[in-house]
Image (cartoon, rainbow, N blue to C red; front, side, top):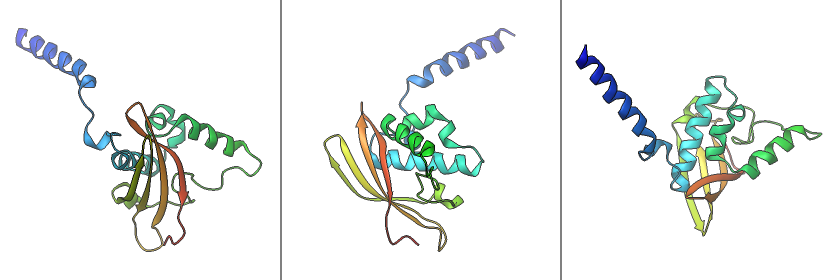
Amino acid sequence: MKRFLALVAVLAATALCLPAQAESPKDSTATPEESIRSFYRWYVTALLANRDPMEQRAEMKRFATDRLLKEIDKMKKGPDGLNGDYFVDGQDFDEQWAKKILVSNVKIEGARATAHVLLDGPEGMRKKLVVQLVNDAGRWKIDKVQGRDGGD
């Protein structure tokens, strides 16, 4: 019994130390590329599970600026509403997007960055986006998403 309690104590102490460790690469926002991949992996997975990512505010704030989240809220309440999903620039999504996130043409200028993003899926389900990010205390956060012409 003493060995069991000692094991429980060690596991509990280890669990308390885990948040202090560095984030795993899949959750990292240290570079614009990592931030974009982590965000879209999480976001599309939430959509696939029928969960509205916008209702998961704490998680959204990890990846998107407060300015952008307020702007999206304003769009939703506007006279025309929000026609489709802001972050995928459309009304549909594909399950492959959670795994096929291609980031290219990254340009960093000080605390701002832009990148081209391809959410790759079968023909007709590819989304090309331009994502703008802001570095907020060492974390790259999405500040704007625009669809690119020439999507599939």
